[in-house]
Length: 142
Image 1 (cartoon, rainbow, N blue to C red):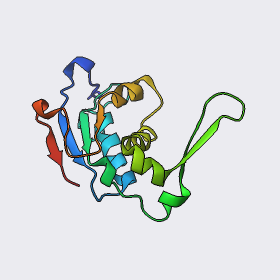
Image 2: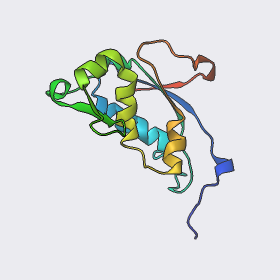
Image 3: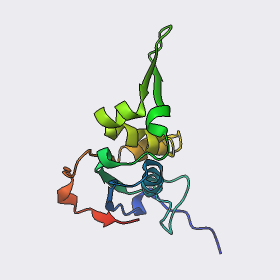
């Protein structure tokens, strides 16, 4: 018996919707990253993009446990000398909660072409409304 290898043409992509309200940000990100990679599918193959489309709603209501709001920072560098920019997660969650969720998911996806392609299937919204209603996404509870 040989090992099953999925082919890109055989992949059936579904649409899922994940509600991040009152759920820890990291646990939501883990679930979303697994869906984007397709890890829960029986036909998962590591070198083939098997993932699904994921819509995350209520990103502004995601919860950071402990003292992460005060102690955790989002850091980036402009590329110039002394160009380190820091933003506390309390500010980030108040102004751009979509970015906080995206960064959490991006850290759990591999830094490869498959990972970059998977992140294009991620759609994040701060509130209840989302633009992908025509795709009839399946609501996930966890």
